[in-house]
Image 1 (cartoon, rainbow, N blue to C red):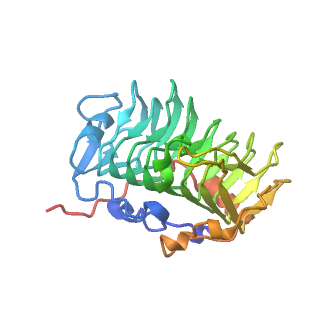
Image 2 (image 1 turned 60 degrees about the vertical axis):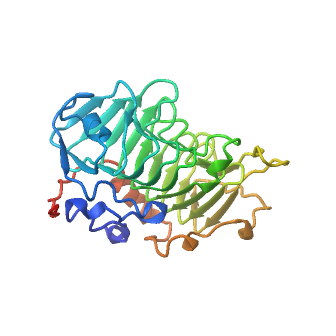
Length: 334
């Protein structure tokens, strides 16, 4: 396929740890468990020896891989400690029941997993809060949770979400949870080469933070595609927005930050986006570029092509969990 060579990360499957430090965007420093030994998940049990939960709770750096395929039913949130890579390549592993919780941690990579059927109040597929940073979520499939699929709140920052597929869901991705959380002004997130397939809203919804969206495909949303609320800055670049029955692509919600006197919405810049099937940008006329960050202020390069039908077709095929072999681990630990 002609567009394939334009996708990022063409060589990260050449060896097991080639993922480390390779994310584009704000999560580019995430190294996961690069400097730790392999941990083998040998059981689909929720806990105990050889379980995913046992590996994630350990304090030392670990590169976690799977020797089994199947469904892991989580009875409670699975907390992930710092310097972990959860690498699903080579198997097909689905998490259900609850999700992953990234709380006060750093340097996490989550790759090639499925998340489906999370139940309960405040249950997200991946919940990132508080004060977590240097995180990369890549090539995951997420659908049908009772709350969010990925929520990033409470001063968590420097995060990249890439090559993921989102479906069968209402409130997809929340970045910044409340106008009283003014510490969320530090939030910085990159979302690229993702496919939002009929998710209803929040692709994403943002408060306070800076978000760079590029080369994503969002179709058939139920309320809006992207929402900017209080003080948020969203740079939407070369994405494909294909409307269903609802045509409004960008929404603006006005809220008052707890330390300000007046209510404000956020800002969206749309550059090179493609709008299909009557999708309406509905940008605010008071949006001004001087109010916006530019991604190049924070990272020098990113892999991007013009929004078009070829990009759309590639993202239909190449996002979410993929049937790929687990690469060889070439690293010799000292």
